[in-house]
Length: 76
Image 1 (cartoon, rainbow, N blue to C red):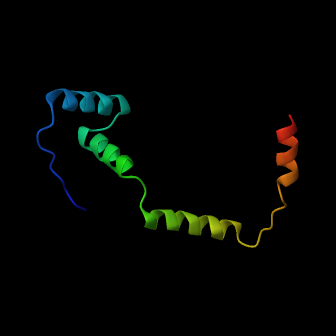
Image 2: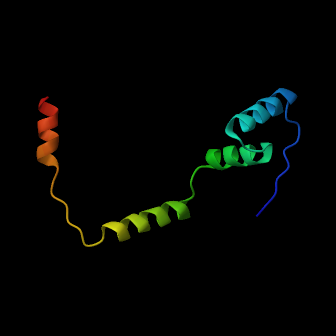
């Protein structure tokens, strides 16, 4: 795992991060890590892994067309 150092954060930013971390019951480091991971989004490899799990979950199943249900819903 890689470490990063963020220099030059405004004291008010650190104060808000600490408050947010405390509200969530996390350390400042854990809160900052979570925010960075969420900001970076999900990677292509992770997306592919999720899709593969869903494909495996639904393998062999067949589903009927939902066109009729959609048409009925549009008439409401």
